[in-house]
Figure 1 (cartoon, one colour):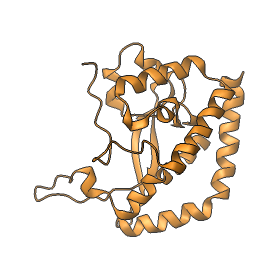
Figure 2 (cartoon, one colour):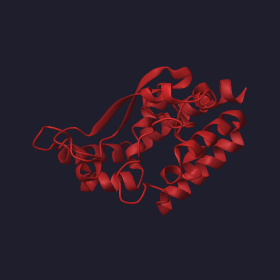
Figure 3 (cartoon, rainbow, N blue to C red):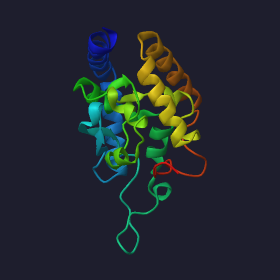
Figure 4 (cartoon, rainbow, N blue to C red):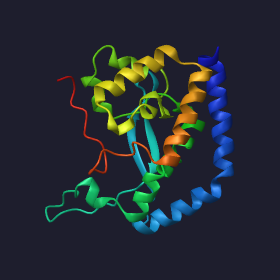
Amino acid sequence: MYKATVKPFLDFLVSLIVLIVISPIFLLITIFLSIANNGKPFFFQKRPGGNEKIFTIIKFKTMNDRTDNDGKLLPDANRLTRVGAFVRATSLDEIPQLINVVKGEMSFVGPRPLLPHYIALYTKTQKQRHDVRPGITGWAQVMGRNAISWEKKFEYDVWYVANQSFLLDLKILLMTVKKVIFKEDINTEGVATTTPFTGKK
């Protein structure tokens, strides 16, 4: 009952309330990022959700679109703006995903939605991470986030799918708050984003 009814209802209700309460902060960040990113405060990307259904994830845009002389985007670390670095370090870039939660595309807690082309690289077991809605935070994130290997992240994701419960979700949310406050496991040292998943080695 929790997975099918209670959790979706709580996700919708709480995310809607939070969006209303933090709307001034949402607007302020949008203004600053609009200035830093030439009028583009949001980042949109296709991601697979529950049952591998594709949806458009919304995040605050923390990197600009600067390119080299050949028109290719510069490395992530070179495009990360000052305000973007702050927004990412404090995990404020995740706030717009509350809109995805309200729309029923995501949950507060669940495996993080990754890139669509990763689906073909998953093992049969790893694909089980798509048996539930993806989350803003998840078991893999509080157990190490970008500091652990892809294989370990997927182990945690699959474990969560099999053990999902209200108490586990509450534990993950509380652990997430702690990690945000102490800025734990934000990024692998020396890079702006984690390395791409290339499949089983």
